[in-house]
Amino acid sequence: MSQYAHPHPPELVATSAKAPPTNAFDDMHDSPDDFRRYPSLPLRPCEDVTKAFDDVDTNALTSQKTHARAARRTAQTGTVAVMLAILALSIHGWLQSHVWLQWVMIALEVALGGYAFGTAMRGQKKGYKEDWLRLRHQAELCRLLKYRFLLRPDVWQDTTEESQRKWIGERLHEIHALQAEKELEEAVRQPSPHGPFQGTQCRLPRKTVRDLMQYYLAKRLSPQKEYLANRALRNEFKDKARIWLYWLFLGSIVAIFLKLPFESVVTILEKGHFESSDSLKEMVTRSTLIAGWLAAFAALLAAWLPAMAAGLRVWLGAFEFSRNRSRFYAAHRALSQVEQSLVGDTLEAVAGAPAAQGSSPIGLRIVREEEDLLTASGIAEVRIRTEETVGAGPGNLDDGRVDASAVLSDLSWCEHILDAEHREWLRLMYDAEWFG
Image (cartoon, rainbow, N blue to C red; front, side):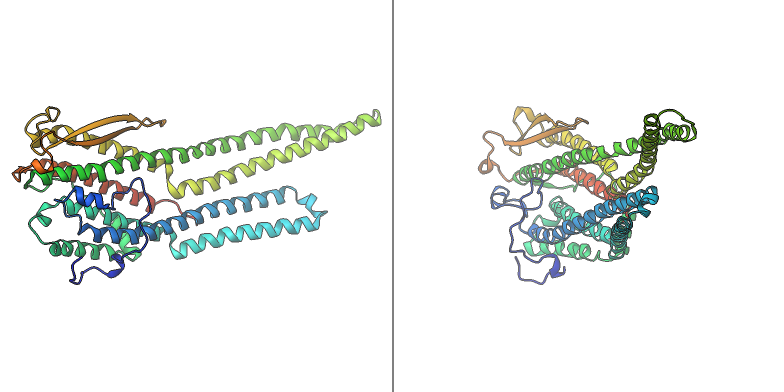
């Protein structure tokens, strides 16, 4: 790292002694092998972005867990408190003869209700959701900055490492400035980036174009597609809890209809005149008691089930599993379409001949391996690998330049899709219901 003073605050580039956690979708950390494999790319200056990302991402994950825990506990304790209050009201007469149990019920209602209320107020006051979204937005801006830098050869080509770090540092300073809630509100209102995005018009050495394509496919496009497929599947499973809203509502209606015949039986038995044997009178009394309890239980269910549905709705509304699932599916498909263009038309345009003939002047051939994910929605996962054309290895490529605008255009369009996807997520989660 150069010794000049960076224009961005030290908080964003503080070096961590701990190794970054293993992440199957990691597109930010470069291994020593990456530096050896892609020597023509300016990966060293990107370390500044990676350090900034690590710091913000760690805080974002902590804030996310805090927000999720508060939302879950608010929904759980609030629902149980309401259910206890309904139960106490339905058995009020019986509790009058068991005073100690009545006080236990009151204590539980107050404790659970107070905990739910306190958690909700503390979450609102401390801004759990806003902190999480602001930090997540900063982390994603760092991620986008790394690849925006790599896709700007006009910034790093024929320039010194110091000037490259300075360009990165100025933009990290802008990212770090997003500290207050009003900056988050402004970020939410910002439109998605303009498109279709046109890549930088320039000519690059063949080896540089090859390294850039290999690096982007291996480090950015494939991990992002797998991440989107994974999150779509995870949200699909979590969103299945939504079906319980339907059954809880339907169960409440059914409980109301079940309550009516039991009440009718109680009325008939209480008003009937039975002058037969004592055994028959005892049976009538017992039947009246059972029917009365069943009617009370049906009424209890009719009130309990909507309370349970409300608690579940709080949890589902806080994270918008259904809408996020649809977003992830759409972004995954969009990246797949760009990938098809990249490994087909774009590579042929750069090569000047069909890629399948192995005659690419950049010494690169892309092989696509299609596999189907086992999901109800049937996302197609496309794995890609790059192969060097025989006779065109790193040592055999001359420094002749090729028009890289087609490659940069497709890669920049991928970044446009990822940027737009993140901003849509940010808007959705900012407007999500939050009661805790």
